[in-house]
Length: 386
Ligand SMILES: [Mg+2]
Image (cartoon, rainbow, N blue to C red):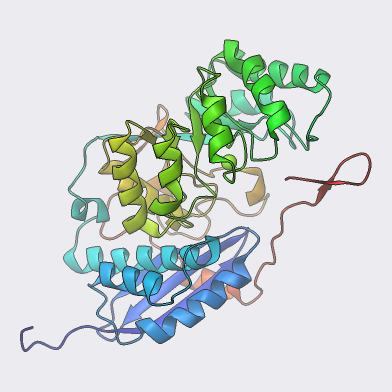
């Protein structure tokens, strides 16, 4: 170590902001500031608790030592893994990459080896459960510049539901394909094994781009079995939080597309590693991101520098955002996410490239959201997966 005074982390804050996001702000004693996103929809209070505890490890730490901070938070706590702890690490990790790249005056992707592509393919959401009108939504997305969308396969569904319900699924997927747009179909972990194979078979002739979470990620063996019965690429990963969680899906050839969420799966550092692991199994990488601008920016930087990346989810106009707020409402440079010909530009500017409207964030976080997903029940009062 030379004689220069080293920079130290002196402040870590988190902000619960609408519609259901959690931002992290880290400041150093030399005045550097970075932002990240630790959104874990429906569990923001728990993640804020984990970030609070992380202060005991990180205050006084060298902000340039991102990997050391990651490993310290992951391993030193003895108990590790899972959505809450890894989402907290994700937001902190993104903020530290933001700080480092801003100090060096480069976009984060330049520190990951530089760009391997000139534009980044993206897709948007069109509902499919509620809201139900996918044909109009698909046409609107096409008019916005998207060439691919994602829709839910079904509303709440029983462990063994009437095969008649599958006709509606085929009709809805067909309407979207008729709009001249590619469509990923998200089973959302709400479909159980007795229904999944039949549903995959029903939509297979329509050529969906991929099928997502065909079963809950608790069932790698059953997903590997489904993969033997369909030509549709199987995608999975929003509820897997580390390279160790992904490993059984790679080793059993269960999935074709890995979808870690950069706000849930250890941030830029860990998702970069998950992408590299995926590459060794010839699996594509398509980060999950129905959340906010910082999470999306983190995805775009990894996408820019990752060869097996294929397409990025983005939440522009997603129904969760509501009428008063959208993806870019809390940033000063919304053009960063402009969509053209199904793609967005490589992020410009230093760090993550998002210029957060800090005053608006602080004001909004004075009344923290308490977002919860809907509670669904079947006709006999039994709980159903959302
Ligand atoms: Mg999903």
